[in-house]
Length: 178
View 1 (cartoon, rainbow, N blue to C red):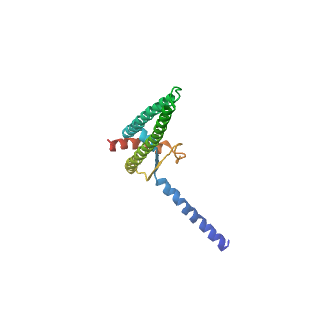
View 2 (cartoon, rainbow, N blue to C red):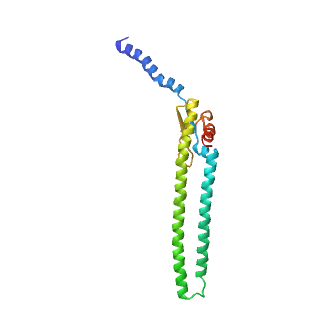
View 3 (cartoon, rainbow, N blue to C red):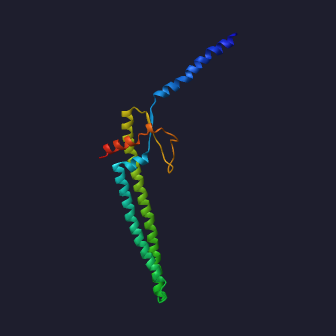
């Protein structure tokens, strides 16, 4: 055996031992997953917030529906053949003004609902983070990853149910947000 063979023969076990170290360290790392959407939908505060948002949207929709009905009635009145040109012109102007107001109102209401939704999401993200941190620290996890969903971004492709902390986080979330 020459010197080169001895060096390679000696280096291989060292390299293999070095490569094996991260695997051994990974055995001690605890990582879990959660589903933020499920936490919002199943927690008491989340259910209440979703119901409030739904009620808020429904109230706005009723106003839009009322405006829509008023526009339909005005449009129907414009079809009356007994109207004089002057009255028809006046009603057309009234219809145009109401239509513009209706369209602005829809835009305003949509913006309001989106802002309310965005605020709720930001608030819940912070509160879910606090609950997830508490559970993770208590259980010895170094990371908790949001599973994601088809509607957003699916982050975890596979996760064993034993590392899903969603239920524990829901309970902690409810405890923190009474």
